[in-house]
Image (cartoon, rainbow, N blue to C red):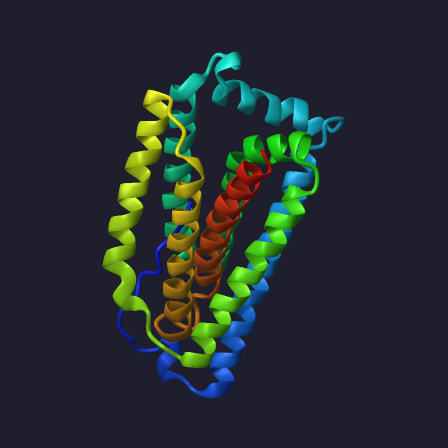
Length: 247
């Protein structure tokens, strides 16, 4: 549930090579689209988790039956879902980075928001039913973490692209643990959630610095997708941690 920014050195037309006014315009578009993606995600989740709404019976219930053992899906069902999500993420990223048309870029961002909305439904439904108020708490904490990390990048103007290798290695290790936990049925626990929060904080530093320095000015849709992916994954593990602590 994350995307990596793709440019590690300034390229012609990159944000680092343009004037202040153009840079401000690019950042305003990027964070404006990020806000739009977050609002779309919230709206979709509201409809998917409305127990009396049409989407709950049409989409949410069949999805839960695939994921949860009592519905016949079990661990393999969740692996299928993760595989489909990774495939959709790859396609969404390719579309969002397309130079052929703006419509294709928006289609990529939209596809990713829809994919995230679906994969979040099990944990958000559990939180909604068993831990009242925890979703709002996790959202506020996630936004505070994101705001602090963003401010750190903007104020220091440091290039965090050197973190790419370590972050990628750590993420592959984390994915291996996630797959193993699904296959063998063990819980990853609160320490894993805490470690993932730290990892995704590193991804936010890395992605934000790339957005500021290495994206082309025409790539504000792709930049917003990369930031949204990092925030969504951070929110997932903040929510998991708070739910575990309240148990």
